Length: 210
Image (cartoon, rainbow, N blue to C red; front, top):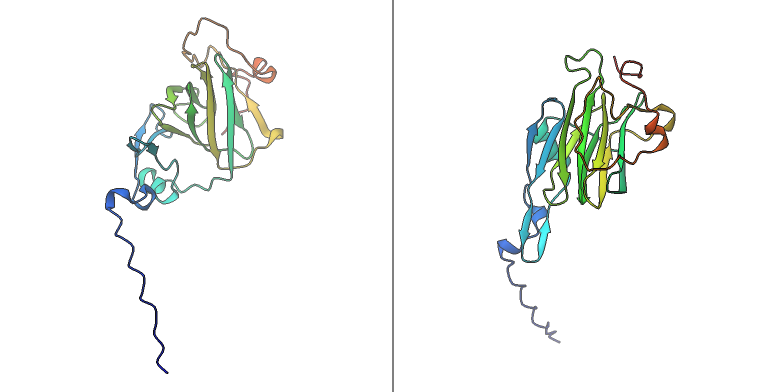
């Protein structure tokens, strides 16, 4: 007896290259050093069309190729804050954290302060606007205090860290320490601070890194 196989289904149509999901393509980052060379501004490649946009906010391989850094992030954090909220300037004196930070809603003025006593830039700061519209991220390495001021009606702030949150080792540098002299944007209102940040240490007495 001869068995007759049913005809094979037609092959699916080829997918035009323009319709291939962007994650299959290499997605390099554009890196811009700041006045504090270890603090980096990182712009992802954004794919956009009439439907919206897509981008990879982190890719370990491409991040290494763009920055020379090989990082193992262990924790992701997400905060939402109202206009005028100032969070910081925070760091962990043990289990120091590197942070890859970005804004997915609104805009903030982001600040890093070099608190490595042996650094030629000890006590110097750098600040820049991060916004959901621009999509630029910042890498803040261990050895730096970090904080931000919300410029928009509200902002959602995401960051990856290279070590776990350790409350016992968390420290706060005073946001308006005159010896650091951060030039915060004037929003016409006093910043809204957590209790711990209101009584943060000035640089001259703060625990810092060697």
